[in-house]
Figure 1 (spheres, rainbow, N blue to C red):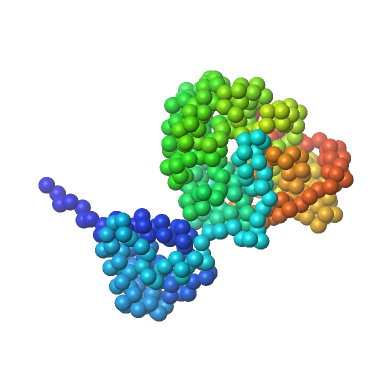
Figure 2 (figure 1 turned 180 degrees about the horizontal axis):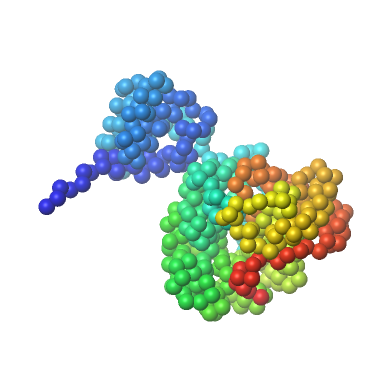
Length: 441
């Protein structure tokens, strides 16, 4: 018989401290401004104990002493974490919320953003959302987890309350990042995620899987990764040609009745499936691509959404970055960047489409705005139930995008944009043939 593995003496208090550091100190406060070196050292030591990272302790204990922490305070911390009975744990005295409350996550009063309601659903969100996919895939190398967490929390501090993810992003990793970032402020934000992609390759058709049991399995897994007990907005990521949309809508309806989901959405769905799904369970929002260089939704989709009272959430509202003016025919993408597979991003297409960027740039210069702000403000001006979700990995771009929500384009501005843009024929398809085959018509 082998000896039992030694019990981690701190394992039963780790959740309490982890919850404290997440909700009060952001979990990585020792890297942030606002605390003295002494207090940061104490937080570091406590966090190492909670994670049983004992091998890292000697260095940080020495650093704590150098930063003015007394031996008695260190002993108190270790003793407190190791011996406090379950159910009665609190942070040590030195780490009381009163001392650290300035680091709670909160929206800055001067950064409040106007809100919009997605159609007639009653789901209220910030006028600009944040698409989180690019933090984990598709646009070059993924962000480090803590960098992504900080960016998401920075978005909330600046007024964004609408965050978009999906199980397939990563896969799975993006939901985990979003869940970690938003757990301390869960009741103040709207989280949208998606099902319907056959990640495991077990459905046996078309790369999609919206079988009712699979939807339920995905929701249970997403709830765990997102660290929540409900999903605000659950989209079908792509229409499954094998599973009737009525079965999909009926399954989500049941999940809503069970309290696991609050609203139902579709993504890249055509008019027929929108109507059929909406007849079973009201659709709160449709998410599809829409921007100054992809305006197909104006033909039939937007009129149907207006008729049925469905909100519209445009992804890639900046043309996958092209409309920002930061991409030219000479731009080289990382080998992992999916734009390498998009015909519209071929060098010759980018060269031809530069005329569109130049026009937007000229209009932006007249308004003392950036091209991205013109593109987003134009979208916001189309309908009051449209909420774009630009993605980014950079704080300065995040702030630039948020700035567009404060811009009010006049009728003359909109006419100028329309006249200038409509004269330019955009070159190149927006998807490869394989990706385009998944779009419902």
